[in-house]
Image (cartoon, rainbow, N blue to C red):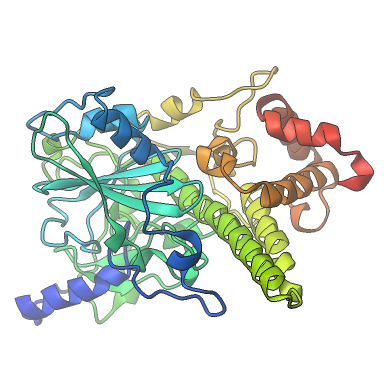
Length: 446
């Protein structure tokens, strides 16, 4: 295959900027004027632009820094990165690297200077070499995806800035039309320019491995499977000739770029699997919260006008709960074809976080042979974003979760009786509000 050289530098730059909409990670633009098909403007109903009632991890850290309760340390290599990762409980081992030019800072990102993304339960942190700021995308219990930056200039009390101009690329049918997160997969040139989108790929754990991580670096091994990471498209006229096999066996990236400029030399395959799962889980949590707010707004409008409540108003909460619980229980998860091993120690760190039930079991335990987790229920059920769901939709979630784990019928029939029993026991031991809900409801009323 021959390298593409026919495009001018200006044309290639234009293509890269246009392809930024495709996004391999978190993308940036504007919320102004967005309106759902049948809904009032998002900002009017939810006050998305307001920071008054935010309660995401970055907002909480920003308050602590501003009040002098937390001091962020600065170093000449990565600025405030290591300090904020520590305070946000985002392990360095969670790092994933994206080299395609598909975010706001395309002039700074490429195969020699990939963008690093670190993950915690309710926050994603972005680090770009030479950038003037760190990037943050946090899951807020009421508003979904919220974005911030932090200047990389040393300061006595560094200030986090809310980036309300980030949201346009993070609100679309791919995020269920609410502020959310997305991961994309593209075939990129050796310069990092996205040349061919993997149109079948969707954020989440349902896409097969051979559609994932185009435009990303990946370290680790996957027995019996291939992915699109670590590879470049050298002939955009024939994207079907793209060969992913050599890139699927990479465990060391030192020959790709100067890894010493990063906090870690890895882009761990297990961390990427968790990232794929978490972004859609966060989106479905936000979707459930917004659907409840929209339904409540419908009811209020009907009361105030003396009109009849639309039939579909109350149904949207149940539909959102169905989607959330089905995903939470890993319905339609793409199976693994053999042993998966990372390189950074992320899997070991992640599993230690718990919580664990009386038998020592945890939803954070990995399987990494047939599927991602040993017990198929999302660990994000313990997250603050999930806990912040409105009571009405949380009640609907508990009812569906209890019914699915008890009977395994319909949408939850993909789970074995053994898996359902284990997940139910773990949740009853480790999720007090679910245990209280179960205690209040007899089986026949679930």
